[in-house]
Image (cartoon, rainbow, N blue to C red):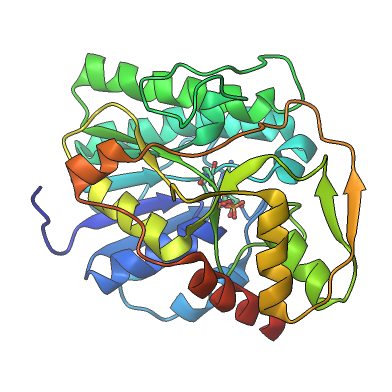
Length: 314
Ligand SMILES: NC(=O)c1ccc[n+]([C@@H]2O[C@H](COP(=O)([O-])OP(=O)(O)OC[C@H]3O[C@@H](n4cnc5c(N)ncnc54)[C@H](O)[C@@H]3O)[C@@H](O)[C@H]2O)c1
C-alpha cells in the first residue's frame, strides 16, 4: 500500500453522514477535496465547518448528470445515494439512478483522469442472509422486487458496473461493503435504529422495537469506518471488502445500551417487522483484517456517548 501526499480527491455524497467524515479525514491527511452533493438527504450543516478550508471545495450537483471537475483528479470516491430505509423508500427511483447513472458518471470521471475509484456499497447486497456471519464470497439472498430492492439492487448493479469498468478499462477500483455505521451527523429522523432510539430516549418516549427485538445488528463507529475506507482506497484488492463491526447484538440489547447511556427509563413499544427486514447481520471482517490491517477500535459505549452528545447538542 503506497499513500501519496496531496491527492486530488472527488467525494460524492460529501454533505452526507459518512461522506462528511470522510472529507474531514482526507483533509487531515493533506489531500485536497472536491465534495459533490445534491443535498437530497444530506445537509450543508455537515460540512459547514469546512467553509473557507483552502483544500476543500463544495459543488452542489446531481451525479446522475455528467460530472466535470476543474483541475486534476487522482481519486474518485462514490458515496452519493440515499442510504436509510426511510430515505430510499421515499426516493426509490432516485436511489436506483444514483447507483446506476450516478455510478456510471463517477466511473467516467475516474476513467478520464486515470484516477482510482472507490464505491461505497453495502451489506444490503447480502439481503436477508442465509449464511452467518456474511463473507464477501456469499452472493446474497435479495428480493429483487420488494420495497428494499431499489437500494439493494442499485448497489448490486453499481458493484457489477465497477467490476466491468475495471475489467474493460483497467481502472483501479475498490468496493467497500459497508455494514451499519453510526455517529454524529446522522439525521435524527432518518428512521435508522441508532438516531431513532437516541431521539426517543432523550425525549422520554417509548423506544420503538420492530418485531420482538431478537433480530441482530452490529454497529460500526464512523471514524472506524472512515479509516477502513481510507485504507481500502490505496489497496489493490478489486473484489468487495466488508467494513463493519463484528460485535453483534440483538436490537433489544442495543435499546438497553441506549437507555442506560442516556439515563432514560425507557418503555418499549413493539411494532410489526417491516417486509424483508434482515434477521441477522454481522460482517466477517477477516479479509479487511488481513488485507488492510483494519479492525474497529471504538467500543460501542464510547461511540454511543459521542453520538448521544451530538444529538443532545442539536
Ligand atoms: N450509514 C450506513 O450505515 C451505511 C451502510 C452501508 C452503506 N452505506 C453507504 O454509504 C454512503 C453514504 O451513506 P450515509 O449514511 O452517509 O447516507 P447520507 O444520506 O447521509 O449521505 C448520502 C449523501 O448522498 C447525497 N446524494 C444522494 N443522491 C445524490 C445524487 N444523485 N447526486 C449527488 N448527491 C447525492 C445525499 O444528499 C447525501 O448527502 C451511501 O452510498 C450508502 O449507501 C452507508
